[in-house]
Structures are given as C-alpha cells and as structure tokens.
Image (tube, rainbow, N blue to C red; front, side):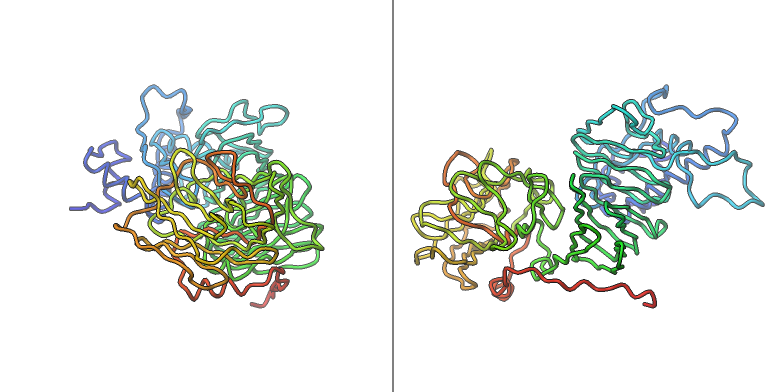
Length: 491
C-alpha cells in the first residue's frame, strides 16, 4: 500500500527511508506538485537546522564528512530534469538561501543579516562554464553553490538555478544569464526555461533592448541571440511582456519576437495544437533557425538558409544544404502517437528526405520516395518499418501540405489535408525513437536524399492529430499574424 508523501519526506529527511519506500518516493516525485512539496520541506528542514546550530558554521557539501543521501531518480519539471536535493544539500541551502518564510520577530530565533547570495545551482548536466573574467565569484561552479550578483556563463551542457524566491530557471549552453536580484535575472544571450511557483509571483527576466518578462503565474521559455533579438514562448499561465513603448499580457501558446523595442506576434493554429517542436522558418539568428516551442536552435549546414523576408518565408534548400537539431527529451520521448507535418515546395520528384530521424536505429521520416510522398515509422522492437506511400505523384513547383500520422495502430499520410494512404500495424507499439539528431533536408543516417526546394512550418507532435486538425493546418497561409494584445492595467 502506498504511503502518504509527507511521511516519506519526513523519513527521507531523518535518514530513515527504507529501500522499498525509496522506489515509491522516486515514483511520487515524477509529479511536479510532489516535487515542489519536497523542495519546500527541504528548505524548511534546513532553516530549522540552521536556527538550532547557528553557533557552529555549516559545512559546504564538498567538505562534508559523511556521504550525502542522494535521490538518483530525476523528476520532470518542464523538459529539463530536476534532481532531488540530498539532505546535505538542504543543509547548505540554509546557509545560501534566504526565503520569505522566515519566522516573525516575536518568536524568531535571533539571526544575522540575510546572506548576499541571490540563488543557488540546483542541477548540473554535462555543464561547462566559462571561468574567465567575472564568473559570479565562483572559480568552478558546483551543485549547491551560491550565486551572487553577476553573470553565469554556460559554454555547453545544462544548469539549473533556483532563486531565493523559489523561481527556477534552466539554462541551456551556450548561455549567459546574470543574477540581478532575489527574484530577478537578465538573459544576455542564449536560452532559458523558467518555472515560477506562486510564492515567486512577479519574477522578472530582463531581455535585450530594455524589454522584460514579468511573471503572472507561469512557465515560459526565452531566447536572446547575439545580435539582441529576443524570443518568448509562454508554455503555461500568463506573463506580462514589457517593451519600450508597449505592454502585452500573453497566455499559454503565445510566441513573440522582440527586436528594437517591437514585439512581433508568431502565434498561429499550429501552436494551439501543442506540438513538441515547430519551425516557421520566419527568422534565423546566429546561423540557426528557432524552434518556437522550446526555442531550440537548429544548425544550418551547407547552403541551407532562410528566404528573404520579401520572398516566401521558408527554409531554402538547393540539394547541397540541410538543417540539424540535437533532439532533447521532449523530442526523444515520443510514445505511440506521432504527427509530422510540413509545407513543402519542391523543384523535382527525386528521392528526398524532408524530415528524417534515423541515427543509431530507424525512427521516422517524411519523404519523397519513388516520386511519391511517403511517411515511414519504425515501431519499437520491430525489424521492418511501416511505409505508407501515396498513389499520386508528388506535385512540384507549388506549395503542398504533407502530414504523416501514427496513432499506435495505423500509419496515415495526408496531402493537402486529404488522407491519401494508410497502413495498419500488427501491434500497438511506441515509435522506435533514436538518440541522434533530427535532420531536415536530407537523410540522417547517410549523406543522401537532399531536398531541392523549400520547407515551411515544420511541426512535430507527440499526438495523433485528427483529420479535422490536419484539414485546419492545410488551410493556413504562409504569412505571419500581427495581432498582439495590448496590456490593460485595469484587467
């Protein structure tokens, strides 16, 4: 029988959690609310420990005499994984984090002034830091290190920062992020994901060009290019985006590009259907195309480039270039539901791989095979892929909407919103997702099948879109919408 979470947290903090309960505890921490309760309990425990032993200095994690008890299991918070903090780490938090939950003056234990730190490092994953110049006063940041005013420069890998307010920010290298205050940071360059619990309401991330994001209870992703162009995607709740001249209230699904004080609306029907990745190919910064969901940056290779803004907004491929994206957890955890959709304008019917994921093992592809559009899915544990091809030739020299859908049992292909082919699987199995990157414009397993033409509005879903949804997407125009909602302070 499952034990209450509170009892397991108490046992963990007392060092009395049994091996059997540890498995239950790890499973429970897969829930975001449970993880937040655990973090809060860790902080409270640490503060009590601090108050009882303030006469003795607290040891740093790396100086502890005993081996800390660590939960190895990771619990998902928002794409990047959050590691459970050990009791030893919680003790260190007491010396580095100052929370608004401090006791009132009448009953409080006397305490010195709050520590100068604004945040701590709560997770590191293959993180490499630039230690030159002002690196936040830390020679080599480690898990549990206190972060004060100043920048943290992540060259590669991932790092997670928890502010004193309990706002959590995940950094993906390369990235430079500056601690400004206990509930405020500045993204100088690169990409961050933020989760803001209720107690950190009002958390601020400053962007280039005097723009800033003010939390209204949310999760969001932000990206700043080296030339100062910012992107914002609200994934949950609401934020207020403030630019030089305007303020906007944005809700989940809204995407904006901010440049020279102007916020451009990138929201459309695709975003409302919750893809795990979506490239409109409207903009490219630093030689990379921006995925509007996680603001992941795909790399251009060869002659691939984005068309001139006065031309069709699309990825231009001439048979010598392609795009690559290092797939993260969201793209590597496709189950037994998958949809891949894109607008394409090809110059020929030669064999071409529009989207291809097949690195160490075959996975899926949307392609032109034997002059016909096709969708291919490899199920996990199977040796032969399911290949669905249209009977009609692939149209050329015009825009065509292609979509492949896998619902666990059937693989279907759509052309311009019409279901033109399908094939049933013998068993309902998940997609055999490979570890390698996604390739756009050529095969991923060998140097072949380059695209000669253009691609626009490429979307990947971890769901099987309905025929009605496919029809809606096939009726899109390739022009962006421009309808931001101006902030009304009275609402």
